[in-house]
Image (tube, rainbow, N blue to C red; front, side):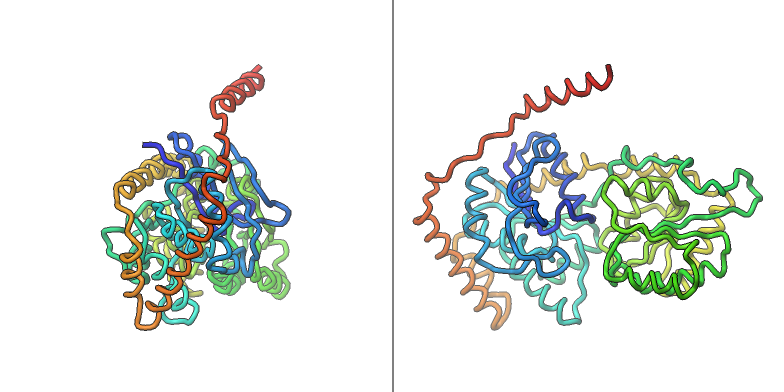
Length: 453
């Protein structure tokens, strides 16, 4: 069966990250399988309104206030009128929310269930249980997922974490990992440092690449502490760091303090098409994350033929075979030792980039991810829509006081929906024209033919 699906998240292009890449690649593969996909996100700068991407992927950039790191201000009901208008215009069957940090995701799932629609959720991150922010986020997640058809996690570790945080039945949670477009991450030995020797026994120069958001959660404090020690122990090692964030100033101060301007290069923000060019300049990819559900970055690096050194946290141990990755505890000493072992492997020519690429190509495929996600859609499509009283019963069990508050919020949401149905009747909402896929494909074929000529 073919579905009309709305992907909803605060995080999408032009912002860069794993969630953004996941949304785009999954949507493209689902379109190729015959489904209609739209993406609903908040506006980015002057990017507001409707934009079309490759293969007719339609993106709604909704005006919304951003409060921190591209996450929008929660309004609970403020998003409802425009969301209802969009899903009615596009004849949406299933709403698929992404990322627990996303306010738009939570609100879209809430409103879609009130409107009697199917909904599922994909969690891309791990959360703790002790600090105040995690407690509040987990309570919000429990509220949202109390009435959900199905949940998808990107790793088994992420599944365990989500089940505990939201008190879910494990049978309604599936594990579908991320993937990589292998053709976009081919090794290029010619892009590496020209000082890299062709001879087995020569002391060679090794380039270590870091590509990440420069934030605390990505272990930037650990990286700042480790780089000077690694440079002191290995005189022929150079770092190239891609990405931006609040921790960039710490890296710049470290470079100034230890006079490492010629050995630590900060390239700043990267566009998606620039990531591969950065990765192919290196021999080792370093990931210092303190928490990670999957880490698509290490898959892209291994696909480019880099040996990976990573902190052993979250779902990272599930991602790559043992011969592609060296693990370290999230501690300075262990990380330095792990990088030292990786440098020795590079010098002894134990890494064959094209072999890494071929293995990753066989392991990870967005086509496979789309097929498995489609099975989730098929399963939830057969489920019945719970009546309002059953929804209230589910929310009431969320806590002594929280349950009562959640029931009030749901009741208000239901009344707002009924008011919108009266004020803006569904029959008055203009249906959006279908994208002309046949004409688009014909034009693409003609363009390819002209390029060949």
